[in-house]
Length: 76
Image (cartoon, rainbow, N blue to C red):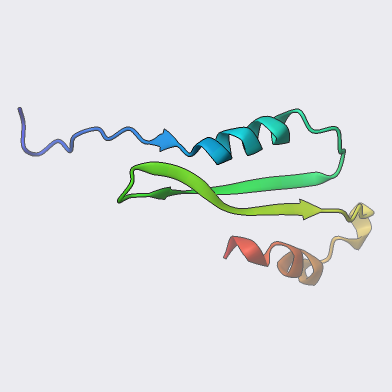
C-alpha cells in the first residue's frame, strides 16, 4: 500500500441525529431551517452541532448587508 495516500475512514451517524434528520426531512413547517452537523473524530461519529430556524420572511429590498451579517453570523 502506498504510504502517501491516506486511508479512508467512514463515520457512522449518531442514532439520535438519524431520527432528528428524518423528522427534519419530513417536517411540515415552511420556514427556513438548518441542521449543522460535525464529526466526532475520536468516536468516528457524525453528531448534531446545532439547529437553526429562521422565522423572518423579508422583502428582497430589506436585505441589507447589515441585516444579512446579523442573521448569518452563526456561519462564522
